[in-house]
Image (cartoon, rainbow, N blue to C red; front, side, top):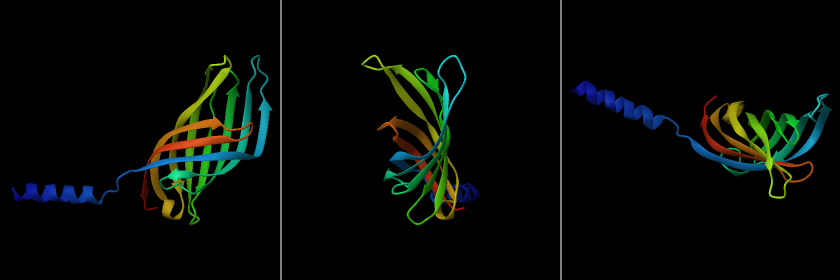
Length: 165
């Protein structure tokens, strides 16, 4: 019987010491700094856009106040679909950085005015970092919305654990 009590106590202590996931919810308006645009020679309009965008995250969680840089490839068939994907490098105020890998599925649906409406929904996950973000783990959902002809709002929601590198 004492072994069962000791074993149960050990499990409770391990679980108490384990970090629990915290919520993350940030938005950032991302503005293009560099772009390479290429039309692909297909019967239906099809283009690829390689872009570096920058913005500042605001919200809750470890990325609040971070400077974000997107390195993205947006493969789009206007009016039909697309598969944007890339990386966000997040630099928090102390200088530490985290790398986020993301991918969305672009789907065009009829809008209320009859024009195509873009649904840009996907997922993200932390894949590495430096300093205090060296061991960060987490994942969630992502949405991209046009806020002007050139700027996009990136919204990331999910959970993270700030682990040790």
